Length: 116
Image (cartoon, rainbow, N blue to C red; front, side, top):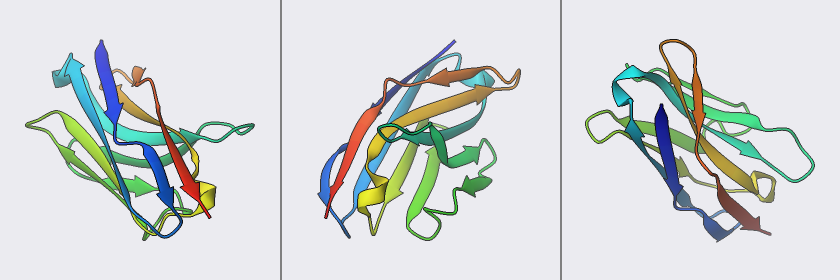
């Protein structure tokens, strides 16, 4: 079992930057992929970005070139640097971890609000 705790959400003006962080604890050795998902009101949860243990990344088209995901395996953390934010980025952002048996763990979520 992996426990995830997000931090860094808040209110930012459009065009501004925000950095989200997620600290993992528990069965860290079993984690392969970590990432960020988001869910806006009335919409389904969607992938934002993922990063493998080896550092391979994957981004949603809507955030490519604006968001950067990074991972520190020694500190068991994953971060999301959000630049050039847009009102459409407003959502609850969830940290996710997937282990080598494809079991998924989720954080409690952190609210990001981008004002126009």
